[in-house]
Length: 349
Ligand SMILES: Cc1cc2nc3c(=O)[nH]c(=O)nc-3n(C[C@H](O)[C@H](O)[C@H](O)COP(=O)(O)O)c2cc1C
Image (cartoon, helix red, strand yellow):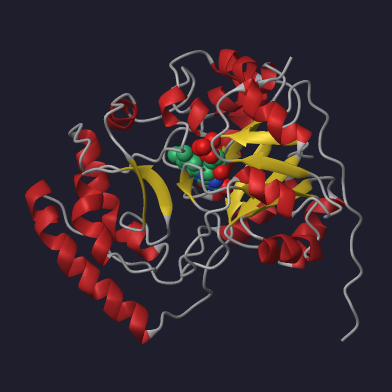
């Protein structure tokens, strides 16, 4: 087969501050947060995951209404097209049973699996081609080459999140304009491309060193909470950092109340768990993690669909034990402040 001609790499937008505000599903990412980061000279990346194409478009329009300049959007690359294996279905059925008593206690039903759910992928890609933004980042995999080429045609930079050398090589081969290099300190899901993979323990510094020979810009993510952290990443060759946890308590973030409370409880300890979604994610240890982590199968996003109603009810009741408290290694440094002040905290002099 003849090789697909590569579309040329596009340059990243020029910014006054080398700080990207990470896309954060589950509430924290808002147009207000993205716009505030933008006005402070950084780049706000909206979370396109777990939203419809319509909702994603509203977030983009909302951000543009509040700030001029570049906008970023993140999409979660769908896992499996089509059918589930018998092994997955059996594991999911067993996890449903394990969750049942907790669901009864909360007065909700365990969520129904939606096998083959692709998170409205094609419609979101179409929207982003029809009404382009400056940057689209992809997580959990390398998007098909046609998608990258279509974004390039409309002038959009395509970024891919990577956590090891193999993923980085695949992303470069797939036409990525830059890589988001996510270390093990990162809050929320580790962006490993395979669902069943046990994530490595490389932090963003080790990954920057490992990937230094690649001929693409690198954006460092994981545990960045000070200007010194940003300076160190830039000195190691990164062109920018992407911080999430540092913005979770920002005034403009939509971080739900129970989650905010959990982040302010410095007695909690961090943990990696598949309990909430089926993918390894870093958060603070609570009752839900202790009870269910040993049983959670590596089936994403179906496990997320099962636990959704339980988490939603716990959040409404302000029950810190029953919600996901995603947090990176630097979570104790997160502070309540305008996002512009947090961008200033993270920007080297
Ligand atoms: C609450 C939360 C939600 C996240 N959601 C996403 C997401 O939708 N897409 C994505 O690429 N990364 C997501 N991440 C990971 C971030 O992109 C980034 O890698 C991470 O926040 C960096 O580590 P830090 O939290 O220590 O700054 C999320 C992180 C958090 C804390």
